[in-house]
Length: 301
Image 1 (tube, rainbow, N blue to C red):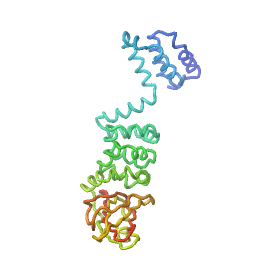
Image 2: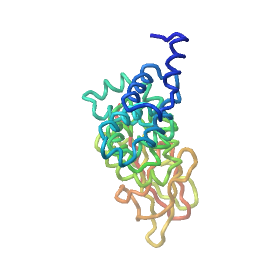
Image 3: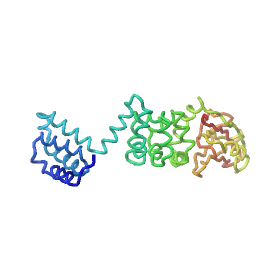
Image 4: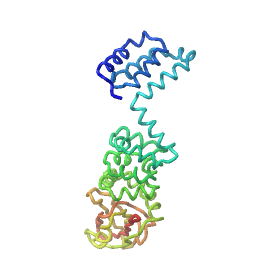
């Protein structure tokens, strides 16, 4: 029910008492009172935290650990930084995680838009490995530049994402997700083999093409072959003349250089997997005698 102005004022007065003057039992009663009407005195959790630090020294905890535990647990409940973590652990331990996401989707959508909180999620291996297998969660994450920036910055999150066909499907279809990974190119390239190993098990190879170039020019045949539809592009960068070595480049669709090297002679397979990008990537021979082999893989319908 909604409190009247008079009721809220009375509760605020009781909560405003000098906490250093009240007994442990009364402190518990005040915690219960605050929980029933937190809007009455929003600063109470801060006051309580300070009082716990003052009151429960190491020596006091040694002789009164039960009382400390009870009051500290109240403080934890009032702390939003702890509340969202507890909520996410609730998700991990839920018997029906899909139902949990349905019932808590607003909370989840707000969480992933807060950089510090999403960074915590991305760096928590247990949570991110579960999220990467949930379509509802990954669709939201992939659509959020904040969330994907956190994912791209975390080796734990990228490991989980690279192992999940569902997560990778959401990423290749999202402009925000693609841009985040292209902007974190070094991390994306580190993940290239793991991503390839995942997609080749259930995705469709839309194109597989090799092209030599005898001059510093675009590899127009490959570029046309990997232009669409949405998917990942994998490449082996090498040369075709056994008397020289050529250098080839692959540039992401957003014009960021993905890689430039020459590691294999006349590549026609991905035995040397040198680079990863997305459909719309462009290839070029940096010097004469360059040759590239590239594949475009698209997710299941």
